[in-house]
Image (cartoon, rainbow, N blue to C red; front, side):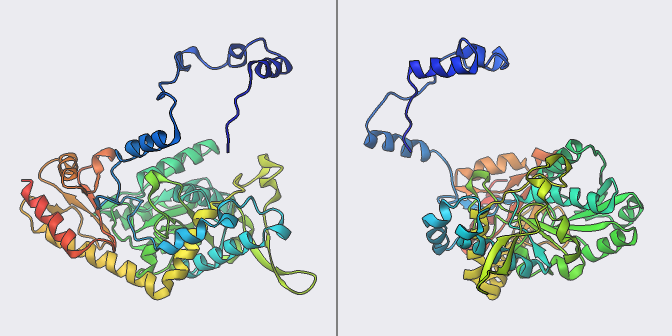
Amino acid sequence: MPFIVNTLAEREEMLRVIGVDSFDDLIQDIPQEIRLKKALDLFPASDEPQVRKLLETLASANCSTADYVSFLGGGAYDHFIPAAINAIVSRSEFYTAYTPYQAEVSQGTLQAIYEYQSLICRIYDMDVANASMYDGATALAEAVLMAMNVTGRSQVVVAGKLHPYNSDVLKTYLEASGHNALIQNELASGVGCLATLNALVHEEVAAVVVQQPNFYGCLEEVEAIRDIAHKKGALFIVSADPLSLGVLSAPGSYGADIAVGEGQPLGSSQNFGGPYLGIFTVKQEFVRKIPGRLVGLTKDRDGEDGFILTLQTREQHIRREKATSNICSNQALNALQAAVYLSLLGKQGLRQVATQSAEKAHYLAGKIAAIPGFSLKYQAPFFREFVVETPIPAADIINRMLEKKVFAGYDLAAHHETGLLVAVTEKRTCQELDSFAENLGALI
């Protein structure tokens, strides 16, 4: 799309119509201390080949998983993405599709969303999935607000170790909606303490939230947590890693009322942090409380199948002050990526990816634990990532491993904790795992 600069005369005319004398008058509400007082430091004008070369040089300064072996996790994972995914989602009818309010001209987009919803319901074993949320963190926050709306209660208890960023987003949502009642359960050996949780949950708790696997990669005792929540009439909310469901029990199978998740592992690249995909599912009894879009299958007047947006709370569009949720959009392209990914892999393929990730993670954990000075911080069962106690600061390990073109993991010092969070996906070879452990041993 070309950029056509407004002429000086056009600018003056716009200012006159607005009713101000100058551009400075237009932006008078912006504090002086945050205004840019100098011209942008841009490169001199050049022809297209030179600009392309310059941009490629700048881009090459980035360190990516295309050139580095990655053990980074903590919510974004380096899984293999089949080439067919980008080939499909980059088609113009998907890549440039507009909001599908007009069902008669949006059947392709609506069907793609419907297929996504159906696949997510199957892997989560839940009755209804919406068209997606912005990311896993906002999906969880919306789930808690929905639980408060359903129960009429005002508190929420986090049963185990929630991702710190998800916790921050949840706190922000609660404060913005007039609530400030997020209670964190005590942890024991990397998972939530059930005895303490039982004491925390009472008749004013709207929901008990658990992340499975949790931020440390450990597996929470979800069935016991469910029993504690339901005993007090609270809803049970599970934030489940969708890829883990290739080997772990689905939230619906152990009684989740609402199940959410971060869909990035399902065919979306890490993208320096986004855009990602928020998964949101509920049991049938809560379908009319679900936030966001929902695509349904119906019949047209000729008896043919047709797809429509359905069961949307109208207040989300025109009476926002009465809405249970103000989100009325979705991450359609990322949802399509997830649908294509799941379709290409199938049930057995998803199980194989999850199995390889788990087995390779346990293999590497054993290798690292055998290195003098290194140990696993927690002994609880884990899926594809784990926390390592290190003899030198984790930040030093990360920086020194960069010299070997390895992303060594995530430093928990960012959250005032000790340890290195290491994630392993199906992409890692046995040679890479052995080399990583050998290089760690050589650091001390």
